[in-house]
Length: 283
Image 1 (cartoon, one colour):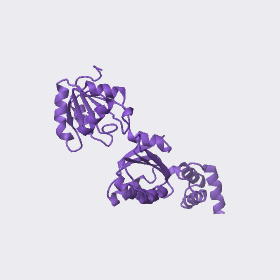
Image 2 (cartoon, helix red, strand yellow):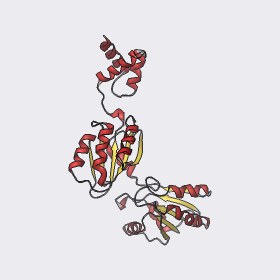
Image 3 (cartoon, one colour):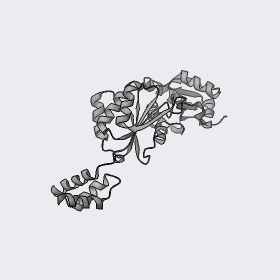
Image 4 (tube, helix red, strand yellow):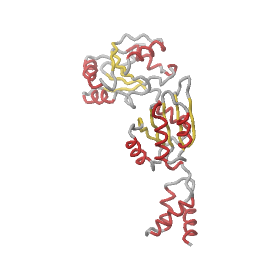
């Protein structure tokens, strides 16, 4: 098991998001090989070590969102001394909605090498299981707590054509889904993924209206990810699209050009069909 980590290199390692059997061989060897392990929660790390039957001889320190800046000098000192430094969080990939970003910045600024041991990711797991378009997506982090902040964010994202992945607290899931319903529209396809890879994993698919209604009447527990389809996933009314073409033409745009632009923003209907429909509407 020796020789997995490089002296003087900061290594970030993804940990299981629920099922310890998802731990990679590289992670297990790195845990055993490290001289210093910076963990988001040292108790959870100890539980993971027991689950994996790994004996770590490393010094273990906490490194979470409230003390990451204070821990950076410790990490840099260990790297300068040629130690094998491993950084892990409670679940998934460090830095992605977890501590580690500031540590990576500091290590890079100090000229230290940074490596990653890839592995489980709640973002990618939720996207993959959702059944929504994976070709373009973005991780939007935790939904803002304030109603005004939520409304502003969803207004900005309403026309985004990429799939959106959010994290949310179970206590705020019902209000978040209601705000998404109002912000993105009730017919927008979405998926509520709960306790991914764990014993009580649950994946619920439907429209935002359906998911919001369900969350309002059913207690939501566990780790939550919400995946929302992009704007082009909602089937638009062809007649409404043709009316938009007519409005653009009446504003001075060539009818064919207007049909092309409107069709570009919506799948399932051609510019030619919109052009013909718009001509009919104009009489």
